[in-house]
Length: 210
Ligand code: ADP
Image: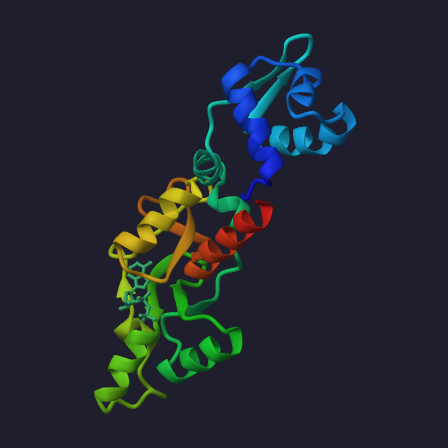
């Protein structure tokens, strides 16, 4: 968030002299209360200052970075996840590559008939297999995928910050969003996808808000 000169001046006054009324701030800046109103609204909505009736404005103690961090810690994967692209284990490598192109994704989640997660297959897996001289029409993706329990996953109620950290620390492009299946130990149903694109979109949206 980029503050205007006047907003920065107001913030400084509120930091130093708060609680302070709008009238007093206007006086200090030699401006009218009406002129300041939009700036006060922006600073209040951004959470940088707070208004208390009959007391006035005071500094919230939160920096712009702090506010962005709070947002990332509050936002849940379930709110931002996208639709997963899935294939079955028996799907040929050829068909999986075609699916990847059609769906315009870099990672496919491999599931059982009932939608339960079995593995993940990505561009690098396909590149590797093309070097091996295999018949990609016959070879099933199940042979080349990264298999459970080695798949890094996320859940709808995990924070966006925590899921994004997993992408970085495990050096992968996408995580399946999963939901444990009641009564079936270790079974995970795929309900979405959280990818580097999702994370980048959030970053852009945070930037637009500022
Ligand atoms: P790319 O193949 O485009 O570089 P990744 O970096 O995501 O994409 O994948 C690298 C390797 O990690 C591949 O072997 C892939 O099967 C595996 N992989 C991808 N996503 C995951 C995940 N969520 N959990 C575990 N392994 C993954």
